[in-house]
Image 1 (tube, one colour):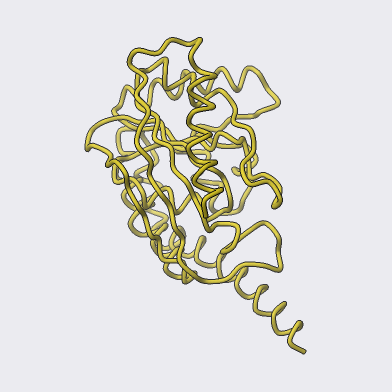
Image 2: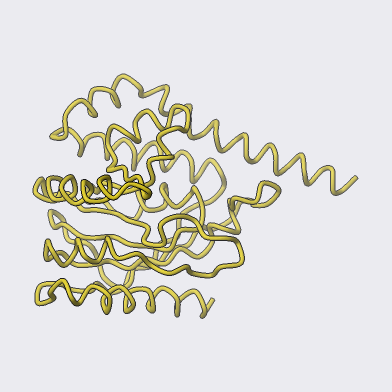
Length: 245
């Protein structure tokens, strides 16, 4: 009987998540449509996504964000934000971390999610990892958004790794881009995503959703050949933090 009740609870928890994802989008649909018509209105779109959509989901799921900071983002400055990927809640938690508007670089497959995917493909930089042309196009679109004063967010593992993997290998893209545009890399550790809302269906539950913003890596004096060293140094910061939990 207890196992049955747990299964029912987990199922309802999952359903509730998708309700929280969808309802604010439907309520604010006209404003989201308006602010996604042109890139110059993206900061207004970001404000709604951060302060209403993400907050509704995190607090509605009983997962209040707890964010520790070794260094703070400066208003009006562009950054390359990178974090370990643990859960669908990572998107909402990342939005709560930064008041500075940023654009996600993410998998094309997410655009297929009902309701969410409609706006995802309008405001995010999508990449098809099987298409080299798509990958090269990411750099051009990111350059344009950085030129508009925005930041970029990439999960450098390339996806959510298996449950048993603490931290997967990082891909080069974020670090190559940061060096090319001479913007700081901001390493961020997400601790609790797998515990709160993993991709294992019968799991998860309310509780704190912690994140730590580490000291930034400056790229002003780096060249492209330094990208691998930068990649591994950033990964090591996040890995040591996860190992120390």
